[in-house]
Length: 138
Ligand code: UDP
Ligand code: MG
View 1 (cartoon, rainbow, N blue to C red):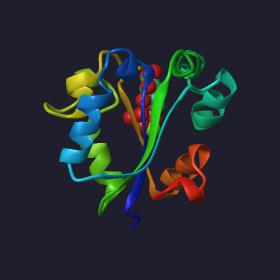
View 2: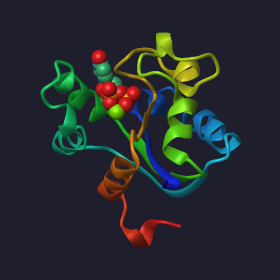
View 3: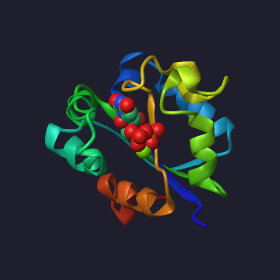
View 4: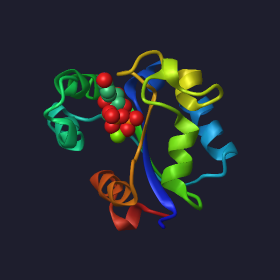
């Protein structure tokens, strides 16, 4: 079991000034930030990041949305990080996300749903590597 996961605060979270409130929730839930970057994805980078979804009907819109503005990428550390972070963010569709979860509190739509959270230890490692080198991790 890994103790790290990967997250992005998506363009809606950044443009709505939710970086601070979302990072506060993440810290309050016991996650330590071990790498963090404010950046913007090109269409090509967003397409590569979400390549696993390329046959899905929402892929094209998702890629344009994820490259539409700045994001915050971070690696987080906690026991049982992947599963506990998925619980903290709530369901993909914010209208189905449990009360008090990050998506329930800060997301407006299934696409612009405030945060990404890795779905497995393997993907956490791949996704963290997409944004950070070993030397950038603390
Ligand atoms: N998404 C979307 N429409 C859908 C399902 C997903 O726009 O019907 C977007 C949404 O931003 C989601 C991302 O695609 O976070 C990746 O989808 P996934 O099923 O992996 O959801 P997640 O793991 O982010 O909860
Ligand atoms: Mg996913």
